[in-house]
Length: 138
Image (cartoon, rainbow, N blue to C red):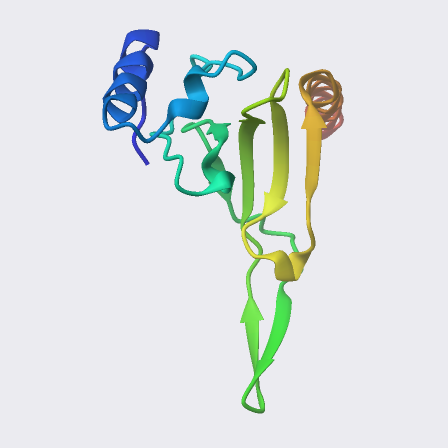
């Protein structure tokens, strides 16, 4: 994934793609312009690409997570859990959503939060982390 370092870079990437004529939807009056965090070079050829997505994605393998199992040709294969934390916004949505979801759907669909909900979850997680440190030091 390409990481964009500034609003100017994001604008240049969008302009470059628009110059090719592929992203007329991004200039439509009812479309949310590329947010500064958008890391995508948009392509109008597929409707699924009409999403702004963050190039700053966290992917990690939780040590305590139970793996999923898949059976292929009479053999059972373990599928380790890899979580992805991403931010995306549909081209006509007013705000972004933050998702915590498994990389492979064998583990379930995950969760999508509004920014406010993500702040509440993050605040509670930080509170619990702080509490765990204080009990560990007793």
